[in-house]
Length: 234
Length: 395
Ligand code: HEM
Image (cartoon, rainbow over all chains, first blue to last red; front, side, top):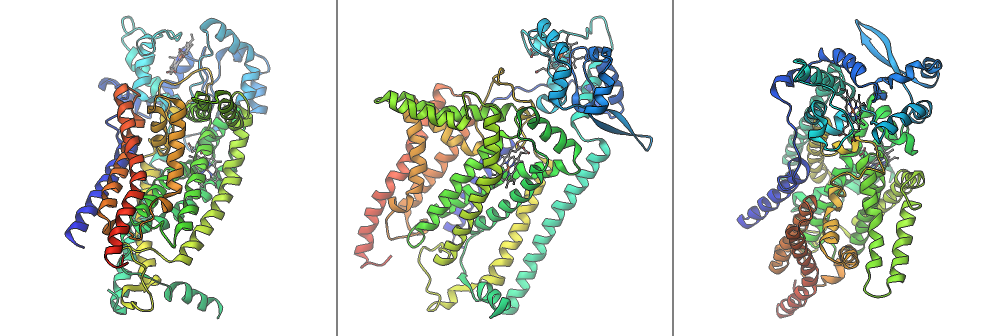
């Protein structure tokens, strides 16, 4: 290749790579709010052992207003309905969980229309008190990320001024508040992310797939070189 | 002759120029990505439910959590859509650079443009299907764009009625609801993929009929210059095969380890017609057009401008009628090409930024440069006809 050709090739390659870096990976031009996870609690959020405690805390403090349908958690007020358990079993799909090598049913997934019909009055009551129905939190971790969730639950007004979500943990009185909130975030994370063993599987699968294609590329490349040399085409 | 004979004729005895450059691989990569979309889409369509109460859950619960490997196919499909558009853009810019749209390949270019347009609509319709906040509000923004025709300087009522009709037709009513989702779904999984398949077949047939273009910009006479051509197989097949493998490695790296951009966080919140998210913008492959539309103060002229760019792109073979081909031999064209590429990228990046007055001015500036590129082509062509004649009709 001539020097001019080389310069052009490098120029267009860098331009293209730079463009896709900005558009797909990191855009320094577009402003985005970042919410940090405080270092003291970061360990808890990613600790698989914090999850079940977080779930308990969630049921105690949040289930009066929020459901997590993907994990089989529904408004507490529904438990009082005599037909509720039966509705879950007949209209829902079981969600399994592995514990000590055994599969057990952790809860039921109810389709949204069924849930919203059965819980109609309960949801209306919440709407009357808070101006809107508190959202189902099944995918909130993916939508908002850990930093936002932690900051928001610690102090909703600070993150979302004017919100009707109450401040439920008061660090002034409860020294364990940051820890408890982090455990709840750990729980919400566990609903959205695959379990640790599955995550490892996916990483291995990804590494093998990427490695396979890289290798196949080299194999084809060297096979071609040899073939072309033999054909006198190189 | 039999299968072996056909195989020999179509591969080994088929000769292509020896000096094809790297960007000539983008066509093959687009084909591979298309196959990935068909395969992953076929799996997704088995579990997806095109009803607004179920759409979000069918994607985020059934496909992502319930079905084995559902997540993998969703990742492939969402990353595939982005890669597809990226490769098609690179393919188009390559064609522009080497002037592969010129005689005898005008039809190849025109069918390619149709593929591009259909692909944009396919991506647009697919984007609504997960029924998240971005799906919903992105589509609201797009379906509102035709109503800007009502801003016309003359015949306001007439243009307004047309715009309103197009917008209503896209939404299936005053609001985006089940009707729209059903329509988008039908288009996305049946009609548009079939159309794409047909167009891609015609495109490939035409490419073979006209022969591959050449980076040097002249047509090789395969009989008279046998030293300039090589057998398609194994010379090109193995080279492009190796590159395709590396492409797939990159693709699957994103699929397994970096889906943050292709499945953006905001779309994991179910669509809520009562809650407008703070920043809504179309997907990156439409942002250039969106920026043109948004930075021009009159909505009507903004609408006209971005449609005109699409049209000018289609008319490229006729705007650029110079007999000389390939940017390698056309310094004036080369300069304008660079201006064009940088303007397109700048418009796309401006589209990701907030619409401040400065950004609007920059947007107008780069829009003007895009038009300058198209309008310079006839002028460059006339100048080059002069050179061509003084050289005694030799390109
Ligand atoms: C030909 C090129 C195609 C493109 C560019 C494309 C693009 C897209 C996009 C951008 C999405 C949204 C992805 C997300 O956010 O999850 C999507 C979803 C979807 N597509 Fe396609 N698609 C194509 C072909 C197909 C085909 C051939 C089928 C089925 C036969 C299909 C079926 C689906 C389904 C069921 C969804 C919804 C599930 C989901 O959102 O993950 N697509 N498509």
